[in-house]
Amino acid sequence: MALNSTTVMVTWDPPKKTEKHGVIRGFQIHVQELAEEGDNLLNYPLRFEILDGYAERYNVTALQPDTNYAFQVAALTRKGDGVRSKKFILKTPGGVPSRPALALK
Image (tube, rainbow, N blue to C red; front, side, top):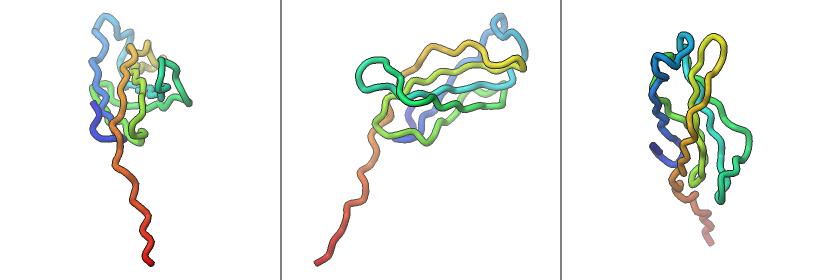
């Protein structure tokens, strides 16, 4: 859910008991910009680590306004990160315009 033009709240359900394969120590959120047309990923992915095995949401900040992003979440155990979730695609809302230049004559 977009909270504003640069912040998105990402929520997830933890893996089921039968799919944990160890103690969940946290989660990793992968964020990557998408091209306007199609499913092509742009730039390097951003990665956010949440070191709380009970977390179920996180606010991803410092995104660009009016931009398409793909979000994925993976659980972390002591052996590393697990399989990423399906991509969730969201476009951040447009931002407010910049301050106009003022020239007095």
